[in-house]
Length: 342
Length: 220
Image (cartoon, rainbow over the protein chains, first blue to last red):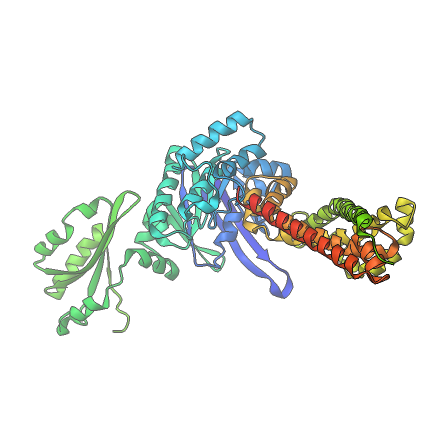
């Protein structure tokens, strides 16, 4: 659907040259909700703007349905843009126009007959849950409502792709949730492929099926959300995953350990998918006659599957612990916990 | 010689009409020239929709040059041009020409500043919808800036009224002419006071109307 082929973007010239995006290759498939995460300045904003050429890549290609849009003449590109909706962090609504008029703009630009515009806009406002706000002005709406108008406007031309530029970053957590639910509905019911950028990992966790991590203009990691969350490779990715999985052991729990256990090995066990429902831990512990102390844990849902991790401590003979962890490792991911110097 | 107010009011009334006429025509033509120039200044600048360094630099410089010439000097300096356009260099019609030359660059600057206030985000959204550059200008930038444009055009109108008073110096007619000919040169303080009061009322009225109109557009 969307393919970035070694896309680079350089701003400025000479000494002030800054490479915002460096040779990024990425494929978004039809039906995906693809999230790109990174700190501010990582280049993700520039990257998403390369999809509709609000920013033109310095080198590399951007293919949409197999066509390299960087070679499109202006008129063809404008046509293509009608097939790619976009929503923004600060909504970018026309302040002097009503909600209705805002959603109608793309249709008017496309010279859709007036009656049709009315039907379509009314339908869209119903879809985003703003049926009763048609005659209000943006400054009478809350942030979440404004973003709903933005979504309705982006969907007006029935695009195949929706680009979300930090669409929830200016919203409070509850509103973020409701907007994410709406985006999921857009993806499922209207079958629209979504590419979103964000700096919030919980946004990725909540609705994305794939994720890419950017740092300093480079793509450092990408894959299914499940894989990246369960086996993050790069340090930045691990930090992002930690930010929502809370799998750092709280100091208070470490303090509770008996003095003789302070240096004993702690294990992190990752549960994923169906196994999260089975009593793996207790049955293995019984088999090797070990006592298990669960120190900390967190189970959540990723892409509608349970996912989580437990921090445990085993009591028993060294040999048995070794065997037990090996057996657990056959089905689950088990790692020794690094305790940073304390 | 005393002024006979029973007949002099007619002179005052005529002068007021002349001022309004001069201002109206000047505003119309100055806006006709100034608005496109202002738009050009916005769209040809770096990062604009029709970025063009040469056009921008030339336009910008010309606007600055005309903006820096004092009106009274401009008025005299372009007399040959005025004569070429209206056939004479004296009278109300002749005063309109220098007023337009004076006000057009002023309006261009005001339009430029109004349009620059439009958030780049809205322009980006327009681009993402596949709007053409012309659609972006006339369907997004101008409507979003309209309220501020009206306030700025009010400022320009008041500027023109002020400048038109100086047109009295070349026999342009209007309230300024009256104030200079009677109030200043013949020491009729009462005429001076009356013209000033009328000018104050005019400016007050215009500013109020401009504010109202601008407010009305900002909110529905």
